[in-house]
Image (cartoon, rainbow, N blue to C red; front, side, top):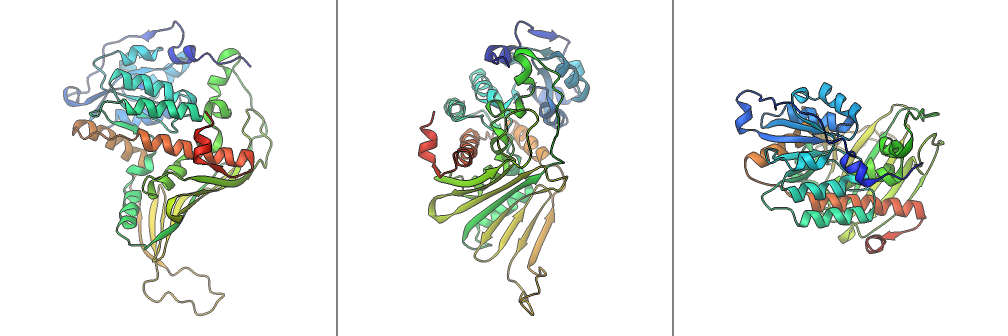
Length: 395
């Protein structure tokens, strides 16, 4: 397989502007709304880009992707995209002074470079997670974030931090509702049946770029690219501390027909300051079964939170079991369901922070959460305990 050219991946070669049309003004929204561009119109770019285009504080101004077929999908699926300029070189979209903000939804290994360029352009940035695929990339992202303008919002696609249910759990944690917390657990259990074949329609230097999610070099692998959501939540509930070391086990239950993922299940323990532990339990290919949530174990209660709900459990009322074999749960004190997809909450917060001139700076926590995932990946690949300092010195 040919090595990917970073320059080609970054600029789309000599393609430049694919199609130029006058930007479509969305009624009275056009003058006051935040104009934004979508960089990367793959599946995630179209998904988040759609929510952005529908936000009352936003106005889509341009889209960008290296590949014409992705441009076509973006124009078809993102509301309003058929009437705005489409580029194949992100440098052109970043150079446009009439674009206030950008969504970066490119392959993971390009996030540090694309984030750095967006910061240098002076734009507000919403960058998809994770921060990068390796330690060097994350260090580059952190260095770029440190140079970002203080009046610019730098947000990442760790949506849990903007969900009403996750925020309620954080408030209960801070106010001592569940007492002293010493253990957290993140479950990332989901997936259909294991794949048995893969038809690769691509060849040449673009093959790995097109199939970036299947290679550790370009995606970070399952722990970094997928499980990073839960890991970010663990770091967040540790009051944005990162763990000092990690150890765990992992393995591959089913052969991989294409790509180089080395594991499809993970049990990793992260050790934080002050005796706090965070466990990641991750299983892929679960025949459709899904269990994605976090549990926070305190001395006075338990908080369980997910993208769909939060629950508070505790010893209030008559919680004693009549006998040791009665395992029915009587501990539920409080429950609330999420009213909508939490990505909408994150997108709304992004544009609101810009309109209200209350910028958020998420680059440090996003970089450290990604590095935490990389430390966990190193621990299970090398089958030993890995420390934060060791991981940071590896690149």
